[in-house]
Structure formats: structure tokens, C-alpha cells
Length: 84
Length: 172
Image (cartoon, rainbow over all chains, first blue to last red; front, side):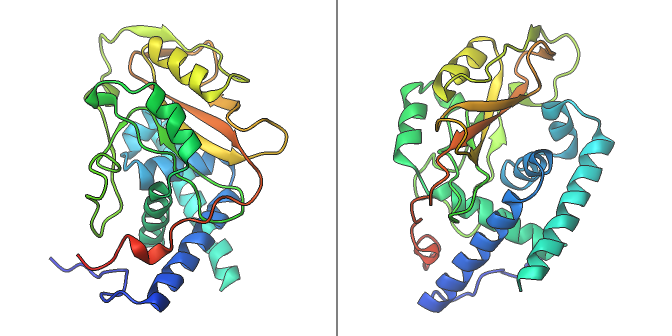
């Protein structure tokens, strides 16, 4: 099972700062999404819910959940690219 | 996209570790049996408005054990009741909690048999802790144990600086 670590294996002050910056950038970008997009991302990537569970929680269809997620990810990718 | 997803998990997870004492106080007050233990609210690192969660429902690995989170951000899971349990479940009508303070809203919703997820949003128009919006809206018929997501006002000012990002992920 290959898993590429997304953090440097060795802790260093520099790496820590970089990781912190990235998180801040990501959270700031998330904050600029629409409320619904934010909700969906939080439920998926923080709470770890499946599409179906998110659909039940928000009372929307599964299709809506997946399209909202992909649109949110798209918007996020654009935002973050702009910042780099 | 995979990379982006990882970054999101990482950011949310890191934010979850930043505990805002006053919010936690609110949540602790209503502490319940282990099954509905709460997560501390996520507080985003940035001074920008943010996404955040403080969840009633989520039975969490997160802050449960304190320091038990190794490399991976905590992945709370819903309690069984919250998982899709379609048929035969009791139905409740979602109460209106907009404009309430979060502690009151949470108790009311829980008393109604619903579970709560809180997403904080920086706002200068509402007092901190005030519920700005709810999903689903009041009057909706939901199965018992369903989740109600609340948007709650947080201070608009710069949030407290989180612990330096590296501190948590130091050597295993």
C-alpha cells in the first residue's frame, strides 16, 4: 500500500511554517466559497461522511451532493492557484 | 484533486486542534454520555472568516483522547443513530433556532432528538454565538437523529493564533 505522505517526514521549523501557511490559505479559500459549498466540504473532508450521509444531513439528493462537491473543489482549486 | 483533498483534510484537521476555550466551555456544559461526546469547534487559523465545526453529534476520535491523533487528521464518525436509518424512524419537526444562542439552540435540537453540527462564520452583524442560519429550516420533518447544521456567528476579528502548525505533528 503506497501512501505518499503530504507532510515532510522530518519536523523542522521551516516545514511547520510552510504547512501552516498552506492550511491558512486553504481555510481562507474555503471561507470564500458559498455557504452550501462550505458545508459540503466540511461534512466530507472533516466529518468524513459519504455522499449519501451528506445528502441525508442536508436533505438534498446525492446528485446534488456530488455536483456541489465537485464545483466546490473546482472553485477551491482556482482560488488556490491564484494565490500561488 | 487528490492533493487538494488532502490539503483540505489537513487544514480542517489542524483547525480542529485549535481549541477556543469559550466555545469549548459552552459545549462542555452540556456534556453527555460518551456516545455524543463533542468535538471542540474548529477554529481556522486565518484571520479571515472561517469554517468551522463544533459538533454535537460527531463521535470523535478527535479530542477524545487528547493527543491520540498521529499523522492523520481526526475523522469523526457519526453515531449509529445518525447514519442513514430510513424506514420506520420516528419523525420530528425541526424547530426554529435562528437567532438563538448556540448553547440554547443545541439543547433544544438535542431535546428534539436531532443532532447538531455547527459551522462558525465570522460576522460583525450578529453577536458571537448567535445562530445565523439553520439547515434544514424550521418546520422540516426529519427523522429522529437527523443532523441540523447551524451557521453560528463568530467574532470577525483576528482569531487567536493557533499553535504553530508543527507542534502537533512532531515526531511520533
